[in-house]
Image (cartoon, rainbow, N blue to C red):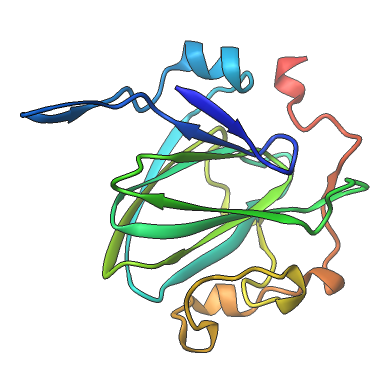
Length: 193
């Protein structure tokens, strides 16, 4: 796999080595050993999958400590714009984002560490989205910032005024009104000390 660094430290795009022939293709979608050698030590404990139609926007989500999560995300059917926003207080890139198009054809994955809010917009008729998490879902730790916060400068590539959002996602605060539970100078992975 090839690891592509982004403008924000810790956020990386992963391109697997895809083997194609007359039968189709094969690739290793995850290797714990290679991931830890090239990205970071992690212990994924839960896999999630969602199916959404064009215009659906999900996010920008995170879980508060001590239930914070890293995610390794990919789109296995269709096409999405995937976005991570740095919400670590004191970070030199606080409030900045990285956006990457994930598709069934490019097989790219996006690693979103703890301390980032994550979301995506569906750009195809439908999309099946999968992600690995390194902590279990804890509804009491749910958090988010508004996916429609224009101050973030995200070009979602769809008209956000007609986007389909959950009731929960419509209630998230904008970044300027948000008090982040993450600190850039804190170790967000104490289990690996």
